[in-house]
Image 1: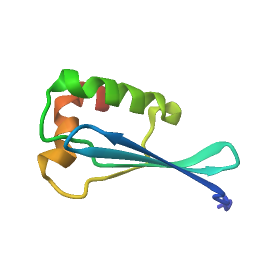
Image 2: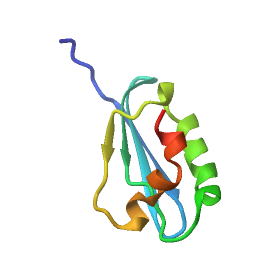
Image 3: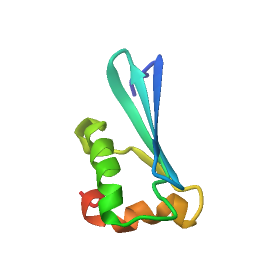
Length: 91
């Protein structure tokens, strides 16, 4: 197995009102090597409120791939974006 040196980390925070979503990209040079997403929710809002965030998030991903999804806990302000935008996330 070839070792990759991570020399750059980018953190993007999506503030969705009363909830957050973090996208963390680990890079070697300019190449993404690993992408982690933490939570995706808000206490308020429906699918139309979430779509701009989720579409921007998808555009920030290499091959629309998340290598690791971390859900910190099951409160709506951390998870309901997945439920409300299931059709976007499922692919």
